[in-house]
Image (tube, rainbow, N blue to C red; front, side, top):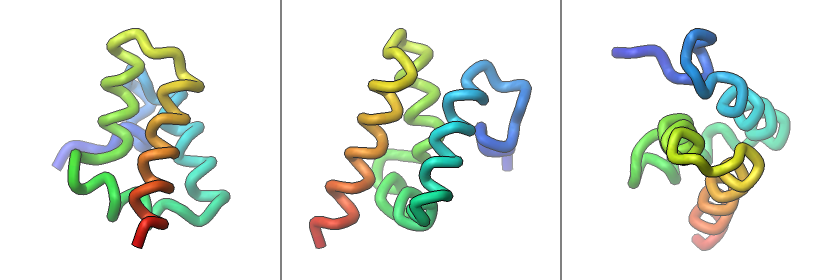
Length: 75
């Protein structure tokens, strides 16, 4: 299995992905992120794809975080 982006410092989007990982870890949301994003794919890959398509870092991170929170706390 390939390493996750937040564990691969050679990945072009490592910085933004790692920063969101730190936010999720501080808020104790890593488990929820893995659970909720499993529907559409890993959250780190989704974030990297948004950034690669030209979405600035902050809005890309916000979109992932909003998705995680709205899906996770809907139940």
